[in-house]
Image (cartoon, one colour):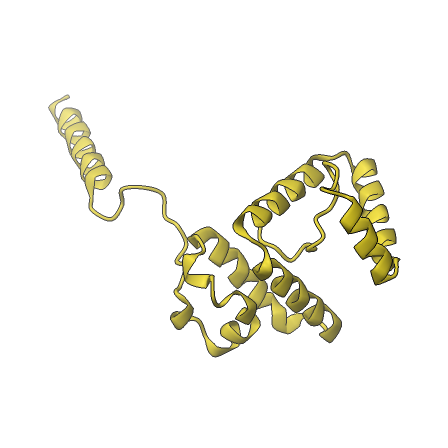
Length: 157
């Protein structure tokens, strides 16, 4: 009995030491490097985000880094699409970015049939001549809830 009590006290002491150990205070977050710490290849891929990179929260940096790591394996057309979407994303204001994230979340919550309908309508819109799209954009103050943001899907969510 005394031996069991000593073992229990020892385990309690070890647990207390682990809980109060410095540097182990909370859940670990992935390292999010500063712009200057990125490889030359990652800097080239993520160039549209350079002005804002060091202000992005660590989670968003990690998501963009994931895109940069997959970038070399994409075909030229896909790489061009990612770059265009990244440039468009970088040009958005923080409020516009937040609105795009919210629209993305709304789209993801739609039932598959409705989501497919939105995707189909978006693709039809993309096929319109640029001047027609500009006219529609000028007339429409905001896209309806559940519609896809005009910036595409390259954004981190």
